[in-house]
Length: 131
Image 1 (cartoon, rainbow, N blue to C red):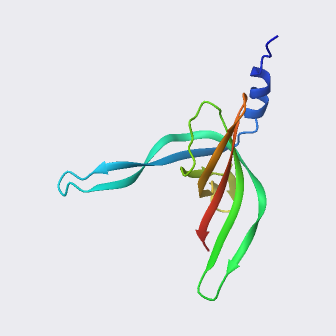
Image 2: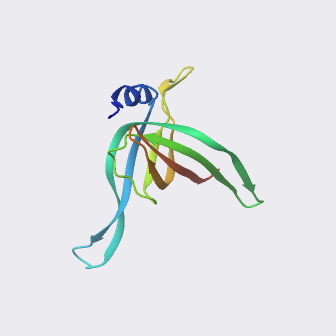
């Protein structure tokens, strides 16, 4: 007996109000210097997804800086091949600011190891930026 998961997947994807662009580091050889460098290249662009807060942000403030350590989960289509260490730019929904019109806040994350389901995949992602 096989189960048709298409209705389950469709229900999950209705919650995808965010957009994600995935970057992966690839080796690129400079033509003039012949030097090999790692460059972040886009793998998937503006793909529907959903982020959800997994744990409260940790405040690592010192006198010199305030590190943001923030962990969330990313829900995205299972056929995308994401890898641990991929860089993600996630645009969170669409927010309307008075006098500004619609704005979409974008944040950068680093992907953990993906956990695949038939209907979606979940990836633990961490936001590591300075405030």
